[in-house]
Image 1 (tube, rainbow, N blue to C red):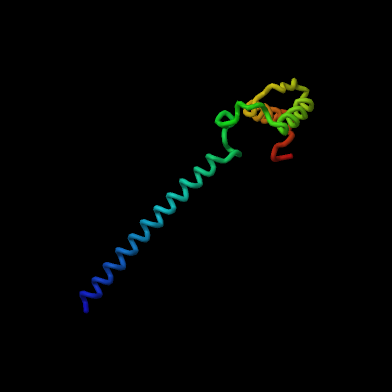
Image 2 (cartoon, rainbow, N blue to C red):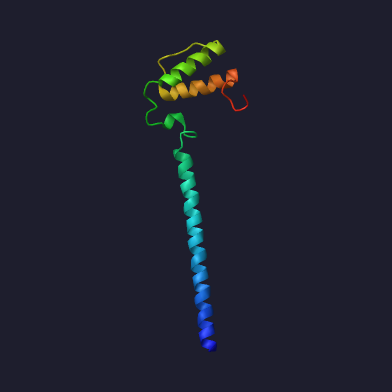
Length: 103
């Protein structure tokens, strides 16, 4: 009997160790997936890294940039690409305070 108790105890500890290793692996994978999700998110992606950044700005960008340019009394450049327009919008938002989280 004592040998079977010892064997059961060893099996229990081995299984517990394996479960802990699996949990660590899943935690590590979850962290990597979260990093990948953030990296792939348009909300944090640098406009210079956009695959369509060289295309002409969108209609929404055009309209908003025109509004911001007028409000900031800055020249409006309608030839900007998507990524250039995004950066210009960011600049003008900071200049005018429009579209920032605190407004």
